[in-house]
Length: 201
Image 1 (cartoon, rainbow, N blue to C red):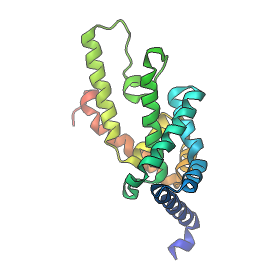
Image 2: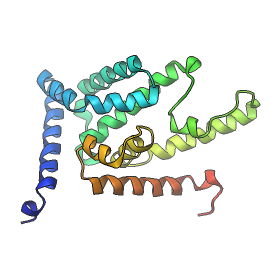
Image 3: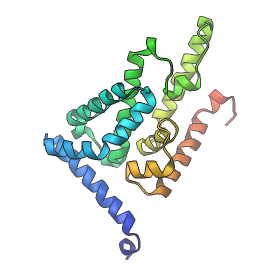
Image 4: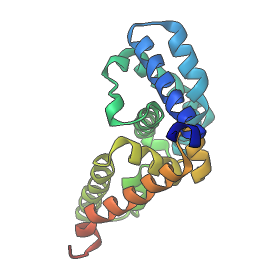
């Protein structure tokens, strides 16, 4: 009865099951499974990488790196920890930030949440730089402590520049679920960052 009342939710569950089946196929080194997953998620991965790197060529390279990592590590995917879309979003952001750090000396901007939120003047003294780097690491640690589904939704919203509806479409999740994940992630981050913000528990 419940499934009949909510056909969209049923379709999404079937879609996620299909994604997991593709990952299982990739773990068995089936090229066609990788091709299908690539076709489904390459746009999301590219969009997220481009928002971090602001460079099409670099974003294209990240897309290739992400799916190469998926090919190598598909067997490690745990469906209990988050959807396939959320997993790919997390891998994409990690690869993009790695690429950004590799070209750091020539970069004019960064979407690393720890560094962009706490960016500094290059003339700051060494002690200030160390302090700010520690704070940036604290922010990154707080983000990484979030469940993968919450972190993926939050990063696509704030660092990917996507609307809630776009995130729901990219992750193949209900709109209400995406909104709840983002709201919950923000509350968890605020709690973790209380010391940094000078707030008392």
